[in-house]
Amino acid sequence: MRDNKEILEEIKEQAIKENCYGVDNVCLLAMEQSNKEYKEDIVNALENLSNNYRVIDGCYIIEKSVLDNFIDNLDTFGRIF
Image (cartoon, rainbow, N blue to C red; front, side, top):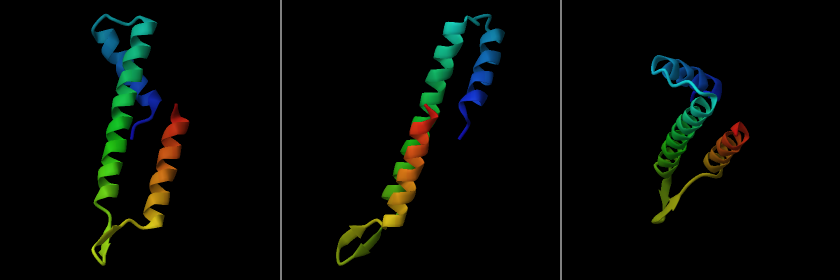
């Protein structure tokens, strides 16, 4: 997962190449790209979580440690913004 500074630098370079480098525009594009990448990461994590289960007596079981790890990752995501 890239951090916001990396994304901002990429967007700045792209905006300068396209001669469209107003502060508002660069910030908006960087924020949109950052949200898109973090959303993709969360969706991938949810897919991994939904595929990480055991079946016991016909019930689908997700271990608490797996959920705790997922929650910790979501907490980290929340602190980024």
